[in-house]
Length: 239
Image (spheres, one colour):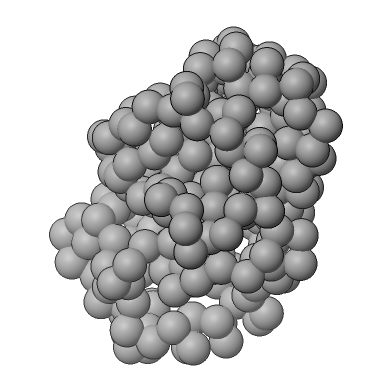
């Protein structure tokens, strides 16, 4: 494993992979600014590139044939897009779109795949992250099926808070409705409930976390998938 103190990257996977594996990838890296709503992967589309997020957030969005959609995965500086490549596939079953603007390290899919085939350790290391992402998706399904909307929103805000410095998020009600799979009026009511309890402050297009502990209490046990990341990949500065 490379020494994170000597590593120039903010992405935790790049900071924690072995020096030899990083050396395989590094010559092909391109730093990219990611604008809001940029498509990083398309539903059932061929994966052209992998993005190691450094700032901002990417949402993995599942969509039905009738165009109903909801967020099923959440990627920040702890993760990467292109997990299907790690598992030997070359198409993504879901869309991945930039939910909060930021920066990422990009590498072409063919260069990334070549490195996976060259290194005996790179795929094994990244499979730990893919496993974590599957756990995160499982908890998302559980919470969406069993929890009230305001509880689901509290969990989603905590996931943002773990990945955005300052606890302030620029996000619209329309985008929140997609992320949570509900109509916009439902998002408005849920935000008002959290704000009424003093947990957040919501203004047009912006949310500020005021009481993180209160949000955690509302979710009835936030953090199992995040704890699994720490176990599989390592400790990171979530906040």
